[in-house]
Image (cartoon, rainbow, N blue to C red):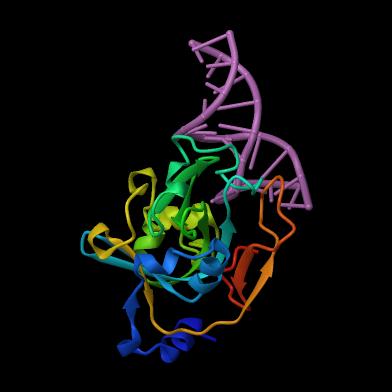
Length: 204
DNA sequence: AGGAAGATCTACT
DNA sequence: GTAGATCTTCCTA
């Protein structure tokens, strides 16, 4: 079945809105769940790339041993203390991790985007990734940042159309499940990874 | 200046 | 399933 058709059929054009910063002024857990089914939009020159968010993880502040904020505020993680809605990018094993700052007032946190379901600009994504297999385009945090050309130069910018990266709500409804976070040394008891059920682009 | 860690990816078997 | 690649950043000296 063509999943793209299924999702676009349920989306209503009139209901489409661009997420504003207030969306991210909540617990990272809530934001991580609510980002599922939203559309990440990226503009590069005259090309438009779009993908539906199908997998996320929530990270908290100094109380979370898996978080980049665990060892306190440093140069490389200071964005996690800053305004919700900002982009937070950092490198792991030669891969850029695309996060969005998300937390309540006077707290610390971010949401990692772990996988996208590609919808538009697929040829362009393939060029950026140097592969032809659509299933491998954006089914992991390092892969999607490469496909969408997101790197450290985006760090600290707000999600917004002016910055050529933003997220749209098209009223798509999804069903999700949760698990423990992937690849972390020490996780919390709570399950903080969230993913769309039965989507082939979830990373595992 | 060098070592080590890391929220990963790829190419194998 | 897993070993090895690969590089950015931080930390210590």
